[in-house]
Image (cartoon, rainbow, N blue to C red; front, side):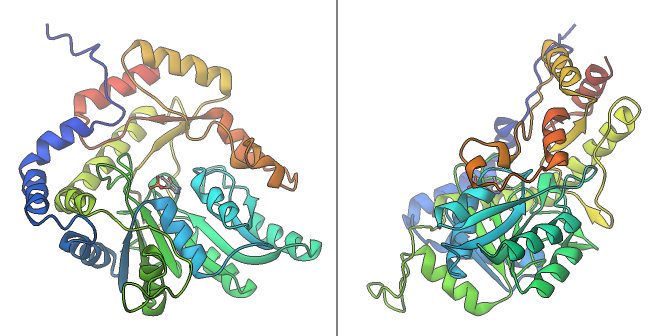
Length: 378
Ligand SMILES: *Cc1c(COP(=O)(O)O)cnc(C)c1O
């Protein structure tokens, strides 16, 4: 007996991935160690070109994180005091943090109970309410491609156009996904990516990028990521930040990008195995129509929080990790609740009680996937 039945399964297995990609990773890192251009080295430009190519975007600007990518885009639109930025309540904290850092106000919107993506009808009513209240100026919508799936982009574009609002795609979790056969990256005026190690395309530290088809905005983002510099290094045109992508991170990402398509295929296979093995015992994730998920996260819904607690305990006993994204919607967070107008967001609140993420990473074996399914089925 090999005892593999109880060997703990990893929620994320960066060590196994590293072993698999080691020759390419080492070669890329050694090249950087040899040239020593650690800030804005040639790998940054190469990665920007490869990412733009991947999704057909005209421009890509490598930056220091997904959060800084959001900040640079919002700084580029001069979003600040008195401005309202509409975003889903059910997302990672960074989406709401950035408008607040810039002095603007996040306006939380509820999400769809099946796809977990922002609800366009609720967005319309939130915009109307902010206009009627007359205190804040509606400026931007942040569509979040949650868990690997696309936000409802056709609706969001129509609303942004009707309401004359800037449209930003927070694609931190979903680079690699497709909508209507096209890779995500061109759904909004600007798209932000994160290369945090746990994202589908993850580096070995913090990193991010901004995609856009607008060359003027791309130039502005390049200036903002380097302290608002002008055409010469010591000309400061605007207040910017230190928001560059490290050369070493770009090197890691270039090595990983060569295998990324295959990893996405493996994630989809695992999702299909989970769907087939679990759909009669839990609510499996609904697919956004006409899309292909990047499967950053595979979340099922239990009946209530008590059932979720029991399930997590049982999985843990059997060496199966699970996680909760997100245990609290953003409008209920201590840091943000005072900025919320009190509107009920019942779907986000309900999902937070019942949602549970199962491991989905490309290193999982079929045997491990079967073990996860068996553990959930009890
Ligand atoms: C991870 C994430 C971010 C932030 O990315 P970092 O690179 O960690 O700064 C922003 N938005 C969403 C939806 C995320 O999941």
